[in-house]
Image (cartoon, one colour):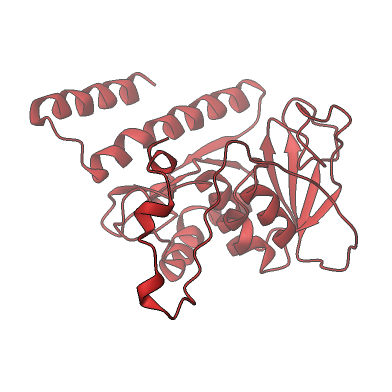
Length: 252
């Protein structure tokens, strides 16, 4: 832990000298949260008498150098996981790896963007052909409504990925549905579970489209919707857009 703290201090010291925060440097800084988390989990498991082993995500999830939103190279990633992760699984050890971050072929740290930690789990599960994937968060999966508005809201037992995407788009911030697509596309069930209520069943995400009826409701506040119609044929009667829409719409 002390080594990581010293590394981070050195990074910050360098940034104060050059007075510049590039996307590459930002990814480097952001990666330390995951590095600290991995170290904490490794020590916690070891204190229970288990056999954890720290695995570096930057050596398993191989990406391009689009910092902040790196794209995974699936061919190289599959080879890297086979080399750097799977051997520990076969030895019945407990691999502990960061989410959210990856690395270029040359070893430069990158980040995977929004939902990166869930995406990492889906990548590992898909390549390892896992029986299931569990995403642990702070809520009991997807709910039928926002409990702050509707106290009677309950957990939705099962959703297909398309329903989850719609709920997430319109306010249900449980996870980014795109992040678990690699698993869903390979028919690997994904369970959304609550760390604070581990016995709760949570929500199962799958590609099952047979369910009928309304599963949930979401709402977004303080929106202004603008509809543009491009079918006007008489150019002389077109009113300039800036005369139709208040500038305040774009300034708020």
